Length: 199
Image: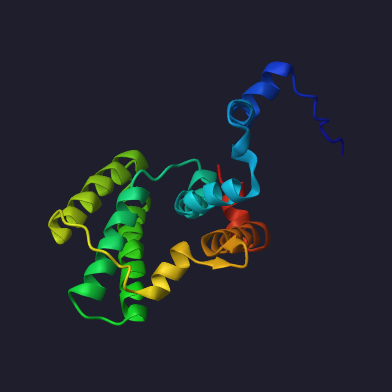
């Protein structure tokens, strides 16, 4: 039984495959030349601290992208879940664990609706998630009345978002832990193998 040998990538194929990484490297090196202080350890930690929300969303988006699809509603679902969390703590008087659970269930509910519409009713994922994006954003706006609520008095939440352990931001620790979990699921579980093999 013969095996097909992989031919080496051409220059254009290499550039196409790694274009995003190459572009990021060029931009990063440009900023280093223009502003050398950007590579100071403290500044790099601050940058990592600021992008943790997007990194967490990216971890959740990875399995979706592996299936050849995209979810346009993640930002709006985050806003809706955050609104539910704020309302549950401030207006509804729920405990912190109950409020966090309710916020998580809100995100799961939107995901379940999206998944049902796409998998069962065969509605294209782009249309489904585009619609849920506007629906979640509109619902969050209605629930909040267009007014932001501060959660600074809830020190446990503040610690998760702005705390430090020694010289490492807590959000960065959470992100690294989350990516290790996602990597384990995608590499060592039947679900992860199925997602990686799905075209």
